[in-house]
Figure 1 (cartoon, rainbow, N blue to C red):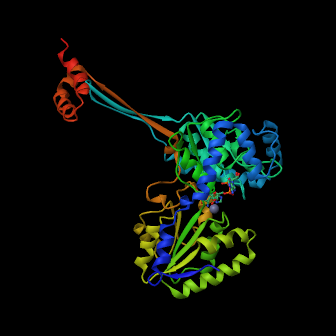
Figure 2: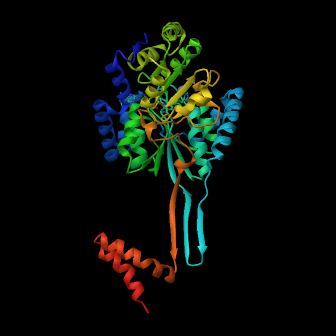
Figure 3: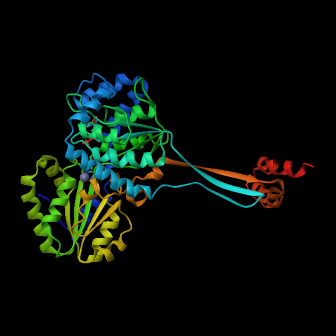
Length: 428
Ligand SMILES: NC(=O)c1ccc[n+]([C@@H]2O[C@H](COP(=O)([O-])OP(=O)(O)OC[C@H]3O[C@@H](n4cnc5c(N)ncnc54)[C@H](O)[C@@H]3O)[C@@H](O)[C@H]2O)c1
Ligand SMILES: N[C@H](CO)Cc1c[nH]c[nH+]1
Ligand SMILES: [Zn+2]
């Protein structure tokens, strides 16, 4: 049963919830370190070993063949394909707003400054596929990559026990022009994309969400290769007042809890009767949920209904938790959202449930978890760009700046820097 915690009386429990990061497990870290090390030295051999161990499948081919893509295109339900195309349209419309251009400042012929915006050349999209498969994540990652102009996009996603990737994932990838798809997941996929193997190409940046092993592996390889963010096990925090609908709230808690036994589903409310009603609804709906084993474990370990003394306290706790998704189910969400400082995405009012954002509305569903919404943002076109500065000064412009530069360089004790300016000023 999901627990009710009184914020003012059980401060230790609240502190534990608020400080908990999914990224502090030493057990996960040790497993991931070992996988990455072996993939680095043994390439495909290690990738296959860990795939067999954790995904329990023996793969004939790591790379999805054109025949497999064609078969998926034939087999896919046509209504589903249409729905995917509608979602692609919405997500594209939203992300087009993020497209950026470089700029140039040349207010005088003596000085020209600029910023070039260029696509990253090779990116790896991690598409989760352990306990569910995610065509929606293909859209959320490939659309911004395409809009940024990335030339080479590689997908890794775990296959099922028969070595097959779901038709919807292959068709969505095909609709978005991605044809390099590898049937591997977990830390071994992240390692292969970072170090390269006989079969898997080494990329410049790895993006996309995944379970704790994927999130930890991305964190560990970051620096050798670019990563987008920590986008680990899903989280939702719902701020609910007395009048909010407990049936809707319970459904939204379960929607995230079914993702992963480590998913966090939390409510903050200032109403005791609401807390009780939600608790009861969660139990009722759990009985009907297909993935109720995962959801039950997530709710008992990472779920909570936090009962606050005041509405303000609800917002303080929400900001401290910095959830991936935040739903505001209060009388005036259009005023209340302004109090939020830390959240990956905010959903306003009772007809904007989080799954609307997962699949369809347009904003990205790849979002920061484990309190990283304090400093990270939703995946977007920007994640697929790099920016390079351009500097031009004429001799006269450099002469005018030289005195200031020499003072700063000498102050830093870097006389070689000062000399680089001086030799130019001494030139006849
Ligand atoms: N934050 C976001 O933006 C976001 C978006 C979508 C999904 N998600 C999250 O993605 C995750 C999807 O998880 P999933 O497991 O279904 O798929 P996944 O593809 O992320 O992970 C499956 C892989 O994990 C590896 N693995 C499983 N158990 C392991 C173990 N004990 N040791 C080492 N490796 C192991 C396996 O190799 C397997 O291929 C969920 O946590 C979900 O909440 C997050
Ligand atoms: N809720 C997930 C992000 O935490 C995204 C998703 C994809 N499909 C279903 N849900
Ligand atoms: Zn979801």
